[in-house]
Image 1 (cartoon, rainbow, N blue to C red):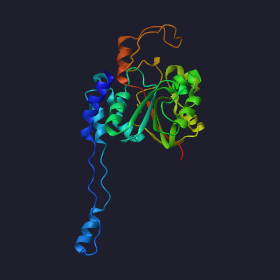
Image 2 (image 1 turned 180 degrees about the vertical axis):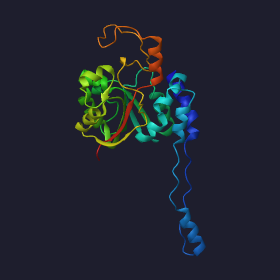
Image 3 (image 1 turned 135 degrees about the vertical axis):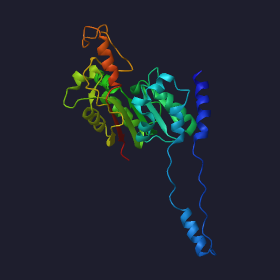
Image 4 (image 1 turned 30 degrees about the vertical axis):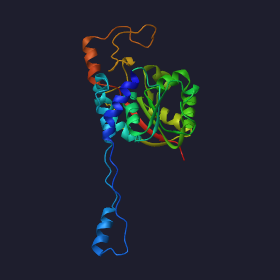
Length: 275
């Protein structure tokens, strides 16, 4: 069923690809001054246009309605554009999850634009591509889990090995306050931006740019049940075995207050493998 849906999505997106530009005329020995002026004008740099195939992938009704409802918080078109997504790239997404929020955009986009999408759940068992062949590795809201399991450093090394020189490591992550110990913040779903930057740089990556696209100043990073108190999880009562949870459920007023925050404050970072 997934292949059928993917094929349908690709068919919808394919017409959105930009058409090839007509090349300007070559000079001739007998051209007149007016013809020379016209030819030089035609050689002006083309006007760059937004990626209409990506716009179509984001707007596609093949995406679940629940996915599209989150676009107001996650800004998929702007975020992927910031990361440098374009046609004909090999994109590896780490731990896409069963819901596949980013996958539901990246996979049909790749199919429609001559690219390749690879989802990887266990990077240390293989990245799904040959070493030095990936154009982009996408990591979304996972580093708090990796820190708790001691996987951050080996995962970063695996990403570096899989990317080609000049390839991009694209990271979106719940952002915690600076100066706090990640051992304390990671169990609540947050890590600091400096923690993520240091981890990537230790593996050899260069921080190229950071964006506030997914920042949320309403998020004070301190919630009764961690980041999962906020939408879309909306945890409102203690979870069995989680000693960090508040022992009592949220009141209706508290639940409404957290819903008003929206989704978490997130860092959006673009690293590059030197080359």
